[in-house]
Length: 410
Image 1 (cartoon, rainbow, N blue to C red):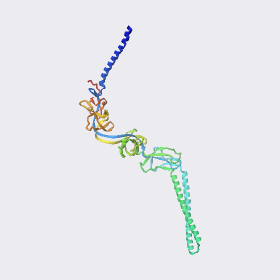
Image 2: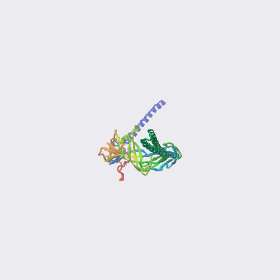
Image 3: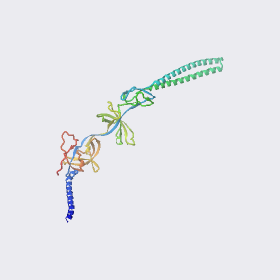
C-alpha cells in the first residue's frame, strides 16, 4: 500500500515543477519584451543623428586599371648574323638616331666589295661598247658617202649598217648590265647597314628607355629575333573597362585622377584618350584608354593604379549622410528627427548622386533638419528616440552625434 502512494506522488511533483518553470519563463519574457521593442509606444530608442546640409556633389567613377607604355618597340634584326655588341642595356635612356646593336658584318662587307668590282667591270664594258659604236657610226657615214658615188655596192653598205646595229645592241646590253650591277651594289650596302641597328622615331618624347633585353652578346640571330624592347615612359596609358552604365557618360578629353598604392600621397593627372566603339560580348564592357602624365617617371608600365573620373557635378543640392538611408515596406527614405518632441518619422525620399558617405536628396526638395544615421533599424514608421547630448562647438555639423544609452524607466 505504501509503495502505491509513492508511485502516484512522483508525477504530481513533476507537474508542479513544470508549472513553476513556465511561470518563471513568462515573467522573464514580460520583463525583456519592452527592451526589445522597435521604438513604438512608450519605448525610446537611442540613436545617432546628423544634419541635412546644402553643398556640391560629384558623381565619381572609380576603377582599377593597369599601366602600359604608350609606345613600345621591339628591336629585331632584318638579317641573320651573330650579335657582336650591345651598345645599351636594360634601363638605359635611348635617343633617336642612337646606335643600339652591332652584328657581325664581315660577310656583308665582302659582298659590298664584290658588288663594287662587278660594277667596275660592267662600267668598263659599257665604255668599250660605246667606243666601238662610235667607230661603227663613222664607218657607216663613210660607206653611205661612197655608196652615193657608186664606189661601194649595196651589199657593202648593208654590211656596215649591220655592224653599226650590232654595236648599238652591245651598248644597250652593257647599260642594262651596269644598272643591274648598281642595284646589286646598293643591295649589298643596304644589307651591310642592317648590321648596325639604330633607334629611330619621329613622334613622342626625345628620350625613351630600354625595357627588356632578350638575348646576350655572341648569340646567333635569325631574321626578326627580338633583341631589345624600347618603351616610352612619358606619357603612359592606363587601361580600364567600363560597363554601359558609365560608358555613355565618358568622352575623349575628359579629365581623370590617377593614384597608386606605391605613392599614396601623389596624384597624377590624366585624360581619356580613346574609347572603344563597342562592348565586348563576353564581359559587356568597353575598353577605355587614359593618358597619364608621368613627367617625373614615378609610374612604370605594368603597375596597377586607381582611376577616378568625374562623371557629373551638382552645386547647391540637398545632402544627407548615406547612413541615413533606410527601407520600410520596400520604400527608401530617411527618419526625420523632431528635436522638440524627441521623435523620428520615416520620410520617403528620391536620391541622386552618391559621393562617398554623402547622398543627394532629390525629392522632397524642401527637406531639412536632422536625420537618424544609426539606430533607425529599431524604428518602424515613427517612434520616440533618445537624442544625443549637445555637441561641442568644434564639432562639424555633418559629424554623427552619439547618444548615451539609457534605460527607459517608463
